[in-house]
Image (cartoon, rainbow, N blue to C red):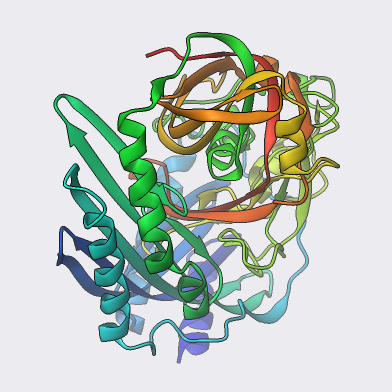
Amino acid sequence: MSQDLARFILEEASRRGASYSDVRIVSIENEVLNVRNGSPEQVELQGLRGFGVRVIVNGSWGFAASVDLNRDEAVNVVKRAVDIARASSRLKKGDVVLAWEDARRAEYSTPYKKDPFEAPLEEKLEILMDAERSLAACSPLIKTSNSYYRGYRERKLFMSSEGSEISQTITWCGGGIMAVAVRGGEVQVRSYPSSFRGDYSTSGYEYFESLALVDHAEEVGGELVKLMDAERCPSEEMDLILTGDQLALQIHESCGHPTELDRVMGTEADMAGTSFLTPDKLGRFMYGSKNVNLVADATVPGGLGTFGYDDEGVKAKMVYLVREGLFVGYQTSRETAAALNLRESSGGMRADSPLSLPIIRMTNINLLPGDWKAEEIIEDTRDGILMMTNRSWSIDDKRINFQFGTEVGWRIRDGSREGLVKNPTYMGVTPRFWGSCDAVSGDDWRMWGTPSCGKGVPGQVMYVGHGCGTARFRRTRVGLI
């Protein structure tokens, strides 16, 4: 049925004058659980099925979509997409040109051991309730505690007028815990394994089990209470060590978003601005030190930005964004790749639903591992701060000047952790900051997954991954608040 409908849509688009067309028929299952202060706050099993059609007519794009999967609606949707393209062509500055891509017939699925949608709801809630109870029991200072679970599956058929026919299924799962302590006017937060609802992976229910939320709850709650009596973060320049869960967001904001070529070209700027990495810098600009190697890699096992093919039928791949500190690549679509005379797309076009237009999205933006071990970096630091787990961030609309706050820090003196530091913050200028990176670990390198990357107007929320370990940044300004 899906293939027949997709072929009908492509034929209808051609009959109405499209020089190119593609269609995605997508079904999504999304289970979201949240336990808060002892009670289930959110227990939802959401579903969505529909299709989206892109066409090029008179050299311009048109897009339309619907949740009604039948031929009559398909005719209406194609007509709407073609009408939009014709109207857009009256204002075009030039014809859309797509970088070459082979037509592919393929099937792909992310692997898993345990189906998240077959695991009993009662079992998931019991784990969340137990973890949340353990958090709350740590101290009467803990006023709010949360535990989270999410299982997600997307089935997608992509077909194009160039002859591609690709079926793929993406499954991911994960969760986390978080607690807030209050004493007088002071508020502290602690999360596990990362902030903002935890950590996620293109795996099955076994990944949620591996997080062992109940086992970590007491440790998280205990550390949260200790933060109340910790010293404040000093305010001065010193060496900064970031663990992976914070470094992942640093990569996301200061490399992931500014290397999206639609931001550079100004076709996406409404949410969070454009980019300082303009085309004149490609291959010429030192983004960081020689220790900095950043890639967009949609092939990493378990990465939340891992898939088989993007929403233009481009096969998943790894491309360098920064090689030994030099800015060398963008995240692209077929159209933006052609606009820069690049040989091929990086394969980053994705939409968060069948009703959304695909745009350039991060896959897995990873800082490649270095030769250091995480403990060696600490032992090698005479005067600094180790920061872990994001609490806040701010970055300007060119992605240059930034400020981050973390949930917890440790003062490092003469190679040892001296004590907890609360309200840790740091600031920097993107190329200067990455230029100060003199140590990158390999032994604790892992993938971090976030399902909540926002972009576009109307807004879309995409799942992306970041691989990294621990890294050190010399002479960084810390302690701003």
